[in-house]
Amino acid sequence: MPTSPTDGPPGTEPPRIEALAEHTCPACGAAAEWNPTRQALVCPYCSTIAPGELDAASGQIQEIPLARALRELPEEQRGWQMARRSVRCGSCHAISVFEAHNVGSRCGFCGSPELVDYEEIRSPIRPQSLLPFRVDRTRVHEVVRDWWKKRWLAPNALKRRARVDEISGVYLPYWTFDAQAHANWRADSGTYYYTTRTVRGSDGKTRTEQVRHTRWTPAHGSVSHFFDDELIPASQGAHSALLRGVEPFPTREVIPYDTAYLSGFVVEHYQVVLIDAAAAARAAMERSLHALCASRVPGDTYRNLQVEAAWEGETFKHVLLPVWLLTYDFGPKSHQLLVNGFTGAVAGEYPKSKWKIAGLVLLALVVVAIVVLLAQS
Image (tube, rainbow, N blue to C red; front, side, top):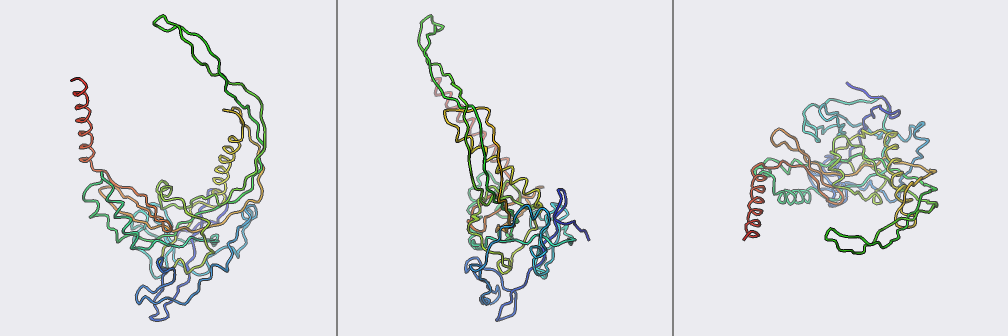
């Protein structure tokens, strides 16, 4: 079985996520699952609500100092407390974490049957928080059907082949980063002014026109800004463009991590290790800080902006965010559709009908021809 190194230097693969505890139904003994509608653990067989083990309000979401974690994260902040079975897809390389008794036969992200057990040398970084599912399966089916109805260019057979009942709930891994930035900036501030000049046209007549000039003066200043929850996706299985389509996730609504919320859902293991995610977050924050400094330059325009920044209080946390995922094949290609499990936002891929596209092109040509004929007459 394949193994992976620890979460550490750049280029290393992250370990798999450990499995979670089962939450048993007190009536029939089956495994209770998190029910987004009832916001409780409910038995899928007898509908009994499992005893309350959730006390998220009393928990605390821990922000972990980034510098310390990059050196060495303590063992008590690793692992998932109970064992689960993890498998890696040989096609898209996504690592899915299942309840031990409920491992899928195909990859939920690309549909490939090439699943192999995945093991790690060291336990992964434990999630500090999660955003629980609020959109239930019934609502997801409605959202997806409405979305398909609006795909005018999709083949008519798409709705029959892309089965809505195959949609599955997945917790996707993300990193969030906080940091306090202090920046000093310098730039040339430009102020527009206008002069009037007389010009002679091609017809020999003279006229006056306004000419814009820029007066440049040096400017400087400082900016302090706190970056809160800079979000970096760590998913390998979900397509990045679709993730952007279902964002944002309201990270202020996250709750302390509890295994009960994951019952009945699959978890994807993070594929972007902490050090790479931290670099991506710093680059995004630097771009935002540069834009913030640019907005402080007085005048109408600027040039030669230089920003010197100092950073402090950098922290991170590993969070799990809910997504409903549908993967379906149409023709030679596999397509994905994502629904935000908290807000219901939807984004998806779909094939286009060549006949419908040709019909639109033909219609456009007819309209253009009619307009030309009317103009000539």
